[in-house]
Length: 215
Image (tube, rainbow, N blue to C red; front, side, top):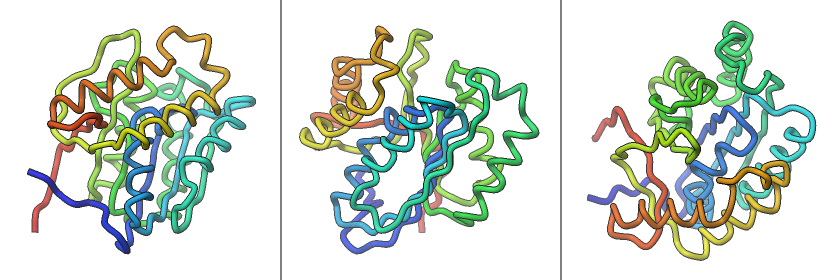
């Protein structure tokens, strides 16, 4: 069954919450590009918990590129230490709570899966559910060495041209990641193709929607 989240002219408040500089783009970049292209009026608050030094510059430039065409957008970059988010819990939560005042009740929250193997990703997920429990929370996936990709229950079809743009923006803005064996066009296109197969599309991004309210 297909549900229409974004349509021409619809006002849509979206909060994006990622642990690291490239997480939102990898997990939900295609969805955001698709929603903007649909003609929906997206108001996006883009939050990254860990973005320091060169990674902060990458995160800022990438977010601006992915959000081009949105009705409005704000970007907040935290400077917490990569891989140490669980051990800075109080400060991380205070920072995240400050973001809530900038988007009091978003329609959609995009964040990490609860069963992600990376400890920083799980912290972001917990913050999303703790602070924005009355919003539609869609949990995205990040491919990596841990092999923790699982079964999803919500898919967003991505047009071939939109996927091309997503991949181009990832490769253009995250030079610091190019040395990693998994960070390449084949990974992103391959995962999108597999998720597309699961929803009878050519390409898709997949999410976990733990709680949905139908009216």
